Length: 240
Image 1 (spheres, rainbow, N blue to C red):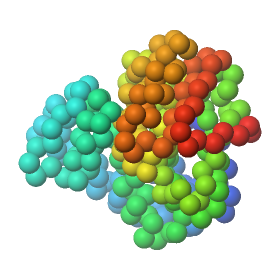
Image 2: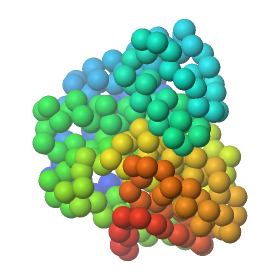
Image 3: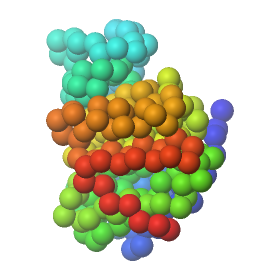
Image 4: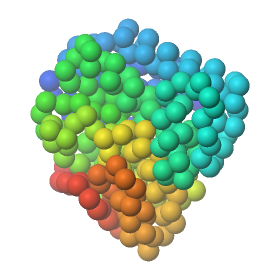
């Protein structure tokens, strides 16, 4: 069933052309210098096919809520998802949205020197100018009131968000938003899931932030639950 992604209205992609690419469960909004729909569709289809073929042979990859070892001969996307999941302590599918965002984004950089790929709140970005990524946190009073500043010289960068109160992704926490920044979008996605799982009450914010920032490769973390918020690392927030 299609679920309208209202947070996409927060996009302020000055000088970029935005378009959508949907293949079954994969629903991307992409910004680039020009409309690269055909190239993006081919890229999404390629990586989905690799995952689908691997899952047919190894169904535990799809269902496990804990890290699993990649089988010999596994495609690169599977290897990197398993690696990210191992670091975060979650199942490999916790990295799937970030995986698609990054791999599609990297391929589109062959055609455009700036690319933003958003996949269910998980973003890969390569930009030549500073940009703001709005924070959507469900019914929290902070929702749509804050943005994270992304400096051009930090990109390419992954910005991934997990929520226990928003969307259809599996979460065991009550967090309204757990946002993670990393050069590795696979890792950002997996750690966002794991961080969100920790947060059941506002008292868990500090523990969740410490967990996230304790993982090598994580640059910044933001946690929001209700009217409480915490952040650590290289993450710059501004009001919008």
